[in-house]
Structures are given as structure tokens and as C-alpha cells.
Image (cartoon, rainbow, N blue to C red; front, side, top):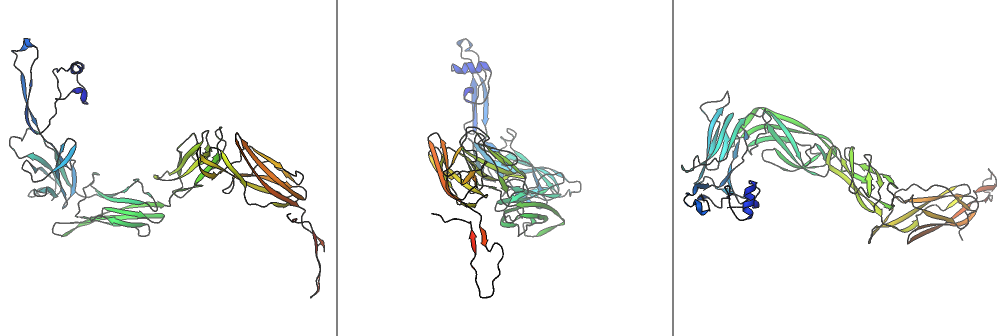
Length: 495
């Protein structure tokens, strides 16, 4: 006897109140502990009712018997299915060996197809193996019964309806994804299903034969079932291909092949793409308290070309439907993913980080000499730590919005132009100088933020354009003779 308070059952409110004070009312909850019979008695506790006879009921506790499969089955003529009888006890399923002393299987209620043979049953049952074999179109019921006469009619055991049908068409499924947009290098399970004219899926026994043609150029078949309905494959090459399948025959128990007069055929178109990858694979930005300071267009390559985008941390970075990433107001990391709209199982991802603080700054290798009137572009690389406890030092992808102090030791040689260099894969920003007069100078860039102070310097030179003095344009010399040529301007020696 159980308490309602310890179960999922909801009793009347007065029963709940009685249970709280360890009393029982007119409704109780019982649970069978083991199979057999038991008597349950109920009497009134008050002494005034001592002459009232107790009520008594006999309970029969039966096993929880399952038939596997428990659903309706559709078979083709000549195919078979093996049933199993199981029992459920305390949440655990165990097999009951068949034939059994307690239970038996029977086929009942044959209903023939209008063109069926009345002298033959729809199906036959092999008691030794619990196997049902379809003989002709129609339907029949498989019944699990008690062998004990006393138990018959006491409880209802599970049953199943077996339909024997004709094949009408083939269907295809692929797992994982259930979409016929695949990706090279991935493993897939391809299944060919048989349906009747009412779109009921037919049980595929081992003795049917389905021929399936898979392009060797696009697929590597790793495993196939005996009946040809299942194939475990790897997608090899991008492109479009077609899977052809045909239900051709049924093999009987003696090995005889019964070919279908008209094979049931179907095709499935397949598209295969290379994996999706995002460029760049990582973006690093200096943290700014204001959202939207930096933007970057991420390039998605591979896949079908139609993507949906997501960001794992909207406070760090957001991304638009066109792959434009915008920094947020928080420092940290966000995983940016691009999913193939035609099969969301396929995706590429990259990391967007907001550095906690810039930690190193330097000019990258570049041209440091220019003739008067020419513009020098001096790229700058700034790196930052990936976390508060430093982590990894990674170059910033864009630092064009950082407040930098720029100073020329000799401002007369070069002039500073407005604007910053647009970031590339090699640097995050940079400055532009215009050569004004011949000479040398040093450019110093300083970043200061709180306790952080970074600086980088580079020497640059300006020279007069190289010009021919003698001869000024053209000279003629005879064979075997020579002439000295005089130039002025051009790059000066570095001292």
C-alpha cells in the first residue's frame, strides 16, 4: 500500500489531509510487488462499527507483458518477421523464451485480398522461432495468449496486426540531417524504404533484394546490408549525383529467387558541397566600452552559398545576415557560426575576441624611403592578451579606432596625413606620411590607456627624385668608347 503523497496520482483533497495524520480513507493506492493473487480488506476503525463486516476484494497481479514489435506490420509476400515476447518489471525489460509454458502466439482473423486464394492463409506462424511469414495479400492478427485456461479472459495481452501488401514505390532517407544536401568528408547512413499504395512503410526483411547504384566518384560505400536497403557511406567529391534503387526480388527459405514481374524503381538527387570555413578563422579587437566601434565582414566559403549566421555571445559580438560582425560592449570571446540554410547540420565557425588590453605594438616590415611628393604607408601591428590572466598574445585584427599619439622628430621632412590605413591580415592599422623635403626623421607612435603605455618608432627618409644631369636625355657613343653619366637626387646613404 502506497501513499498518494509519494506518487504522481492526485487523490481527493480529504485523502491528502488524512494521509498527513497517518490515516486512510475510502481511496487507497496499491502496487503489485510480484505475480500472484492477494486479498485486500477494508474495515471501519471506529469501535461503534465493530459489527460491520469488512469489505474484501481479490487482486490478481500479472506480469507486464510486451510484444515486440508492438505496432502494426506491413509485409511483402514471401517476407517474414520474428516477434519477441518481453516482460517489464521495475523498469527493466527482459526476454521471455518462446515457446513458453505460460504464453503462446496465434494467428487469427484472416482477411483475404479480393483476388486472394481462400484455400491458403494470409500468413503462417513458426511457433519454434515466433516468425510470421507472409503468404498472400490480406491481413491477419497475431495474438499473444495465456496457455492457462484460468488466465484466459482475465487479462488482455498485447497483439499486432500483420498486413500483407504489394510494393508501390521506394523512398529514400539520409541520416544525419535528413536532407539531400551533403558535405564531403562526412559519413552518412542512406536507407531505401519500400511503401505500399497507401504510403505505409513496409518492413524490410533480410530476404528481399534491393539493388542500389551509388556513384563511385562521389561516394565510398563502407558498409551495406544484405537486402540492399541500408548503406553506410562517405561523401567524397563535391557535385551533383543521383542514387538509383530498384526492388527486384524476394529470396525464399530454400534460396529460390522470386523476381518481381515489374521491379519497383526510384531515384534520389543528391547535392554534395565542400565543408564550410570562415575567413578569417579568428578576429581580435581592442576592447572598447562602447558597442559598435569595430566592424568586419566575415567571408564564408564552401557549402551551398546560402548561410544563416549566429553569435554565441551577443554582448561581445553580433553578426548580421550578411556576415558583418560588430563588436559589443563586453570583453571576452564569441563563436561566430555560419550555417548552411539548405542543411543546418553543416556549418563553419570562427572566434571573435575583444582583447582585455593591448600589450605590444610594432611597425611591420615596409618601405621607409620616398622621394619628395611621394606618400609612405607605415603599417602598425598591435597585439593583446586573450584573457585577464593573459592567456595568449594575439595580433589585433583592427585597431584603427584606438587613440594614438603620433610625433615626428623632424616635422619638416615629412608631413602627417589624415586617416589611418585600413586593416589587413598582416596589420591592424597604420599611418600615412608625405615626403616634403630631403632628409631623415623618426616617427614615434604612442598608445596610453590607464596604466598601459605602448610605443613604437620607425626611421624614414625622403630624397629628391633621381634626375639625369649629363646627358640630360640622350647620348650617342661609338663602338668601343665610353662616357661617364651624371645623376642627382635619389636615395641617400643611411648613416
